Image 1 (cartoon, rainbow, N blue to C red):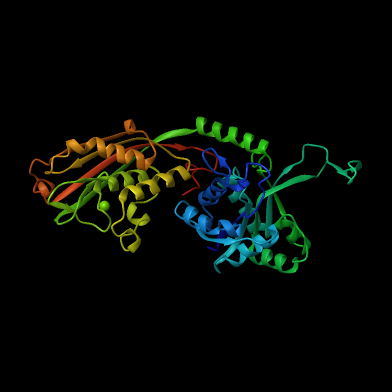
Image 2 (image 1 turned 90 degrees about the vertical axis):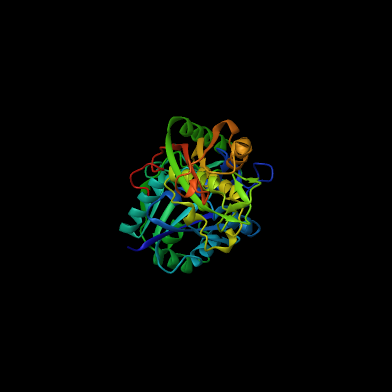
Amino acid sequence: MSHAAAIVVAAGRGMRMGGGVKKQFRPLGGRPVLHWSLEAMEQAPSVEEVVVVAGEEDVDRLRREVSPLFAKVTAVVAGGATRQESVARGLRALTPSARWVVVHDGVRPMAGAALVERVLEAARKHGAATAAVPVADTIKRVDAGGRVERTLERDGLWAVQTPQAFARDVLERAHAEGGSLRATDDCGLVEAIGHPVAVVPGSPRNLKVTTEEDLEILESLVRRRAEGAAVPVTGFGLDVHRLEAGRPLVLGGVTIPFPKGLAGHSDADVLAHAVMDALLGACALGDIGQHFPDSDPAYRGADSLQLLTQVSQLLTARGARIVHVDAFVSAEAPRLRPYLDAMRANLARAMGIGVQQVSVKAGTAEGLGPVGRGEAIEARAVVTVLRHVAPGGLFSPASS
Ligand code: MG
């Protein structure tokens, strides 16, 4: 199966609105506009890699910020002076095996995975395709003096959006031959080499953030989505670590005086690990071993509360919200009750939720098994998370 890649263009410098913050980084529903655009790609089953094209000054920061949140992002590269040059640079950063290319504006946050899939499907059939909506207003050409030159025939006029999708060789040829053209979209370049472009009905909600009003409209769309379609889901996590002399004992971020501590690659905070695994489980995002492999030296001695914050951000990036955590630590010794409130406070802070949303309990194993013999400490956690059911979103049957 030939794979598809996406280029998300976020190199625009427009700061007319937003007091010095570029449009792609303005907050929408509590996270940057760009993250919504990336989420559409992340959720589209056919898209296997994503290249983000950003302003040179934003590249380093975005690499750090976006890579842990969006697993499909393989590169963040610096854009050029024009949108066309930026897409060309994105094209050069794709892996050789990508045969199909989706181009999407970083400032179109509401495209959704379903539309990405429909445009790709049309491109697979026709070689090139774009999302577009029929024009409702009458369009007139106006001269520099502000006077109407003529009225365009409205029938057959469509306003073109992104995503646009292409056979990679078609898009590469269009960019190579259209270097001197000044096209405002990639379909323009493909048309110029005489290749047909299929039109796929987009959505009026697939707005491009251009003005302050656009952001207001999008904000109300996001709010409606958040209110209307959230369902609670449950996640479960379990972790065991061996007790060893000479290691600090860290549970829920609290260092507890005890002659033994938990063995492990990170700080071995078995409670934080169980909570992380439960959170990942609620969103079917795998387990902590996949996200923070213990073969990676970066996680040697890692502060597990920081990793818990990263996992929480991963959920937020997918529009999920943590409602409640209930955890249980099994330890024969030491007595944990005096530390439980401090653990709750640490875990809550790391997840960005209230302490009343976190429960931590503890008990012994009555002398039974490895926990009972004082050889190990075990933690279990159950979490409740609100997830969104959106068209083409987390629960659509097509998304993985
Ligand atoms: Mg562990």
